[in-house]
Image (cartoon, rainbow, N blue to C red; front, side, top):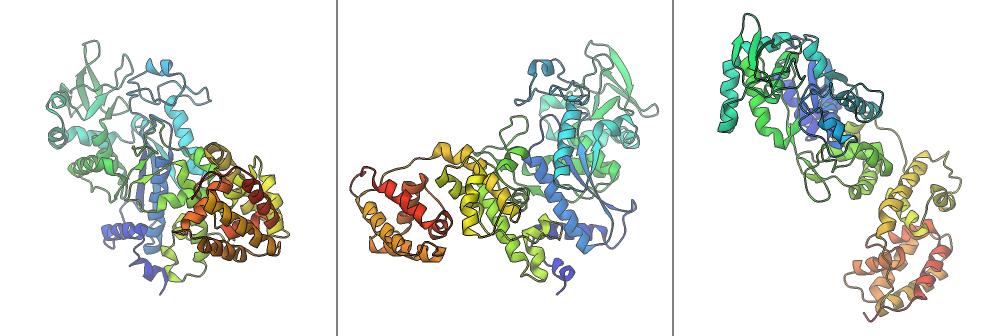
Length: 527
């Protein structure tokens, strides 16, 4: 079976989504000549991993579609940078200065970061593009401000003015009674204060293309709906954008299901089809709360990449997008090693290789890499060595892998540096050693004797066999209690690596010295 044939029935979620787009086309080429994917970003706060995740997942669907259909595609990363600044984010400098510009479009609010960018919105847009570029995404950045002020949205805005009553009929039932009295699809920008105003539309003139509203000083003002004099309230804005650009696919978080429904109705009221897409579950922080770019309670791209690889982050985004997942530092080590496992399995797969996450992460061309040591193993080596620099780890790695150097094994070198960072920031502060009890002390004495009788260069399986034998002979029930004792007494943590393999890496003599140091400590009590 060919890759294309298998893609027709693959249960990998990007192919399930791509097949919806193929069905949408119905065998016809789109009039605009391409299929348009879109992701949205609100630059009222700093970009976070959720923003990256939406682009990564959309790119995976886009690539899956390219295997099923030869119609050209484009991806717009759209920034809602003409929105008014409604509140000052928690995680930015110069909050007092920003507070003076509440209500102004984000691209008019001064830049609080002291960088070269001309506005708060421009700075955050640059950050968005920087981390999307870092991952090699194929996208086109689109600014809401540019689309409104350049006139590119003019025809669609006139269409909204023409269909004003239909848009209101869609929106009003979704609003509280109090909000219904003041709601308008159009948000005029005050010619006097420059603020985006949430005020009712008092009059509208389709022939002139204008609306009348009451400005902040009470004066009635007439402005065109085009040319950047107004923007749309966000649900009509979303529907108008889909209509104006001809968006075919856009996914969004589960919290926006009602918004997508309303925006889709508005898009259809304007005369266009709503896009395909699906609703992904939200990321949660360590307290189980939704992450927010304004609160800054999630991880940044740079924070993830201090401890994990780019590929591990992409894997996290690929896995179970419809399941709520904790996005915190403690998920990183497992993601790094799971990626390595998927990559190792890829070369032995045939057409079903397209079900492997690495096919989607690398757009069908995963690299050929042999990760000879797991991240978890390196992390535990850093822990037992109390490493402050990856050079310490290389003293053990080069003995375990004769001839290996940072130059010949760049992946291990890279992972070693990440492991040291993770150890220093998270493992070391939480270390809590304990002395062994009577049962454990006897087992440690036995294990030390057995290790001493083995060759210094014994392999991991040989050491592991002895570890299992000691645990069984000394009556640990369940056996995992023995392994937990090894980790807590020797490593100061409740979990750890496959112990025999770790001994082979760390060194038999070094492990015997560590065990002897532990056995010389006072006893903690009876079993």
